[in-house]
Length: 445
Picture 1 (tube, rainbow, N blue to C red):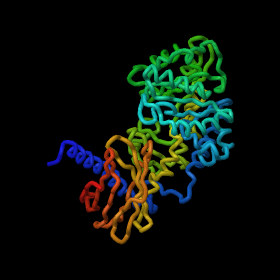
Picture 2: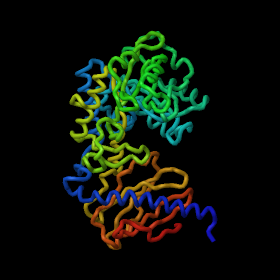
Picture 3: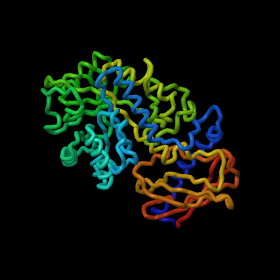
Picture 4: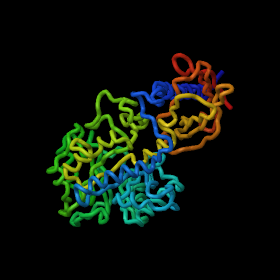
């Protein structure tokens, strides 16, 4: 008779299968598009350099904005690996990219990488900061957002960032309120800040609901602070943009000094609550619209190098950046810069139009303790199975778009021997049928 623990595990496995099955089934409908049909996710050009494509995008945004507003500030969030040729501190500095940006934002440097109010593993902190230090040495201001709320964690976050020469804020991940930060992190009210390099602190407030019922509530709350830099959303909760008059009213701190007001803008994902979103859009239509981020509902990865997507970001009066410029913001804070990792790690790239013996499927593994793992499965054309060729832990499952082809035969079996529950290892067989994949069997290794 199964124990309570085993029943829980069986239920968990079943749930995990259903999730995996849903992802696979969703991907099946896009198989033909990879072969070049007019609908579905756009086919990827083989050998595309996803990192350089993101660098090119950021550079283009920077050049466009700075040509229209002298001194306009560009700050990418995360994706600091773009600063060097290989993403490490030993790679050559990418001068064109570094010249295009004024600062670098980084989440979770000391707190929040695994969960809020949890110290980020030292190896991760060291890896991130080794490249951030290169950017700092090249004159870029480093802005750190640590997700911490307890007094001890907040104080420790500020102390560690200050020791590195970074400016920082410690707050809850919702980014929907102004934290009660201790002095001196919000104590320069009379000092004029005319350039990012002079800033000693910043506010990151991009979600206004539910704390701020009206746009006046948002404006008044920010006006009452002395932050040197304010990073905010250019649109209120009802999707109406803030006006130039309203934004200019925020450029004076409570203490009388001048500050910078910078707008958030996601360029690596499309958000279904933004002004540009069309109600008929879905993954694959338009074809540059990739899969939904399972951690952020309504956010979809995009082929950010596609001119059609870029036209929603800048280059015409209706574009996102152009509206930010029209509202007289001092700069743009660019999010989802690290979207290149999604495509490097698989993404839509692993949808295939046919199955051959060289096929390797890269999938996320759901775990008992909420850790995230990946597994590489090699297809064997002799017996139509997939066997494990590699596995490892990852901090952030970014393989949202894994899918199989639409041409699988009814006897195709997906063998997943690496579904991890705590310290145990299980295998699962999924058989492809007329209605998609079904559970063929499972057991413990």
